[in-house]
Image (cartoon, rainbow, N blue to C red; front, side, top):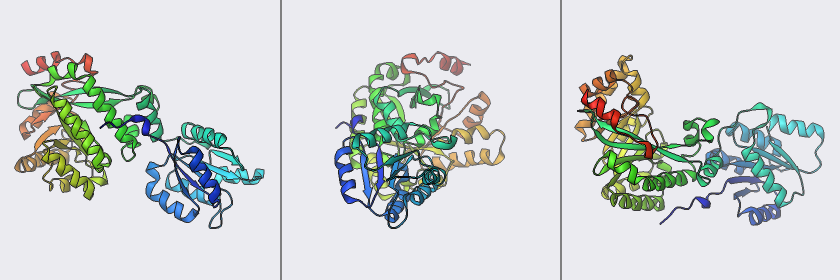
Length: 393
């Protein structure tokens, strides 16, 4: 079972009381976009409030019975400022046009009737262009999808070492976006993706690139090599994706790579019924699940109650502060004790000095990861020479 990248289509919310127009747009643009239509501005706004993270652009007609298009787009702006907004209208006066731009913060105003070709071009332009009035756009999920589809996504690997003797015990695969990271941070890119179908594409790309790089990675990271990848709770809430993931686990075992799944604790879906059911299923299939970014959000302690996790990864910010902040230092020590009582492995991220490594070693952390041992590196360039020197010193 493969998850094809080309299945991704930007999601467009279109609000208009003309049912014939909505039907025509769904028919003519359905191959290019995922068109969500609604003839009620009120119900459309309620839907958008709940689903704004999955929407790439909003189109609204100027004249609607419940609220006019400018008011609708103004409220849409307050819900999700980074989602582009377009206004459809008849003959618009210059005063109305300024009102639309100033209140609704629209990126385009299109006169009706509008052809499908013009609408398609306007949508593509609005999704990829800056917002008006100098506003900075957050990255859209469609830009991430475009990067994945056009080889703009790469992987790097960062080794993990035993806290006991600093010997290599595994590694983590991380994503990089050469072009996108000129304009956005990696956190912004991942945040735009993690609750959207594009995250399935991204994770699929990570696993495909790992399989390609297996010959470079596996001999250097253990026999078998224990390699972790991040996976969004959004993805793991979908059984089709879980089955796809399980097949990748089995394929990688054939080349002596034991895949471990890191799950970010701050995502609300880690407490949802579908996620919990699927996580237990993966545990039953022998897949190792780690709580990533432990200590950063409100779910950390609650997640320790579940029996399907096999380890935790202490957040790099928490680790970096433990040498100067008494509370963080005490929390790390306490977390290690509790985790070991529950039979969980503890991995510390963000280790940047020998002093921090020794402190974590003293507290009983099992594994360490960070710049002190090795920076994230392209698989082909991965070298264990520095790690050997550190272990011998």
